[in-house]
Image (cartoon, rainbow, N blue to C red; front, side, top):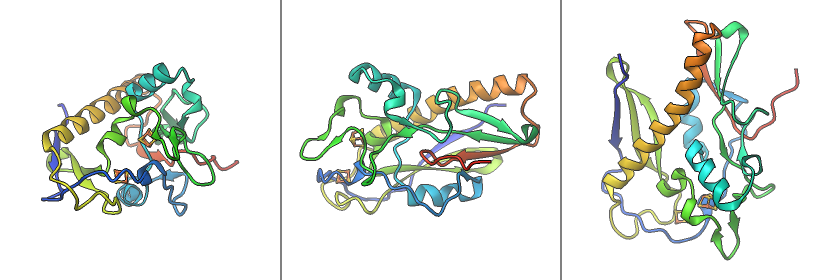
Length: 216
Ligand code: SF4
Ligand code: SF4
């Protein structure tokens, strides 16, 4: 049976107008999290971080526009950057290694951000950037449904300015981003299941992209 996906706007009557401060182009990575984020801590992780998640389409569009190899701007925890699903412990652990935008150290700014100029790939910026300061938190709904709750990041200085967001546009972006991610991850999970590599009671983890895997 297909999983029901519901998109829920949870931003009330908030107003927003971008102040072009560039804070959202600096990617916070909360250090207190381990390399693998267990599902029960995912919401907390999302609340504390502002990493820019990339879909396959984002990666292809940026690569085409800039002529860069994805490895120059895609950050993940694992070395194999195009294999985003891995299994360990006899198939009991399924790891989703979701790609995010690479950032520069030490300030954590996006590799495409230039002081005084802003985003240098604006026409092909990722969906996550188009959404910001609105962010999506994935929750479980009744009967196994997936709820994509659209909230907002209150630290954005544009919050409280201008007018209300275009709700339909946000919902369309969120639906597209989710469909794309599930499409690519789903196909890999299916292949691994068919190859008998995933245990029926496997637990799913997500990596914390950009951190090195601990040796051993
Ligand atoms: S979306 Fe918010 S944080 Fe980003 S540039 Fe605009 S005002 Fe600044
Ligand atoms: S892609 Fe552009 S808008 Fe997105 S974080 Fe990088 S510089 Fe900012």
